[in-house]
Image 1 (cartoon, rainbow, N blue to C red):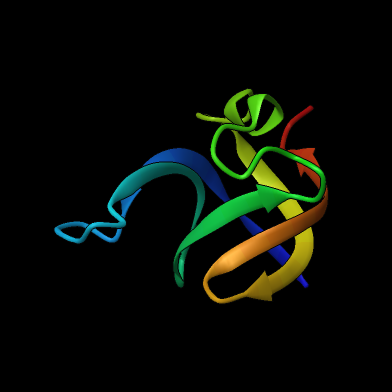
Image 2: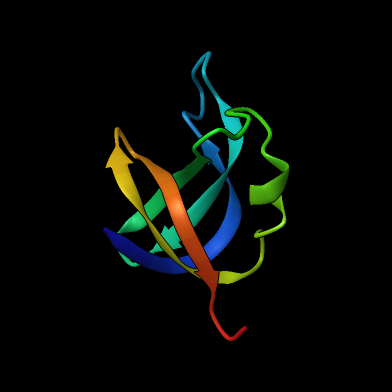
Length: 76
């Protein structure tokens, strides 16, 4: 599937023991936590580089996480 939006830092599971900040794609439908195959699930340097940019992302949605297979920065 393809999704487009701005990459941001987003708080997930606020108020729970699992509360954490993660890189997310803000879409018109809401925030999708981003994860890259083979990337560190807790701190992925490659995803951090995308924060603040508009992207078109391709991947599989699984339990609110978008498992990225490809992305392009809009306007590049």
